[in-house]
Image (cartoon, rainbow, N blue to C red; front, side):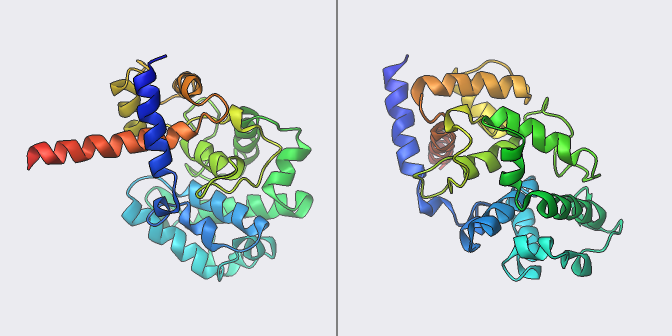
Length: 254
């Protein structure tokens, strides 16, 4: 192991895993929600919409949060969402229509009637690892016609589900909630997008340039060498490394 790189990544992780990280990040919404069930539901919905430009998707999450008066769990559980979210083909955000949002909430509403929460549903399925959680979530929502809000299979990078699981599982964090102790945080998988992929390649952590689950597993395996008991501390480390590279580039440009 490169001891210099380990020290560098540890410093970045400690510096960026802070509540200062929350404003402007989709994780901010779950910290505004009250009650564990509501935090879990808010986090899941926020993660589903977290793609593209933050300046565009953050207001959409806020819109739903406001419709629900801050309690998305109760709003969906009681079926009140049907008043505000018509089952129509009108665009809600990018490729997602109100129909897709409506169907996502239909799926959650049905699940809440039988298992109370998504976490309880996963526990009933015997889930103890992140990969099992991803498989159960993708399989469940595959029949609900939710568009691209949730991947249809676990073969893709499943970035947003991996991010949601980080929020739910990692404990003792100013950012992540740690509501799901039934999943071992050592099994968490790296939320992978093109930016993270670029940083990982630049650090020689991986060579694969495709955003697939195979790459996710390979990168997470490398991060375990630096953070064996908490591999997704590496998420903050790579974010910090990317920020540092941006600052240096801007400095050179100036």
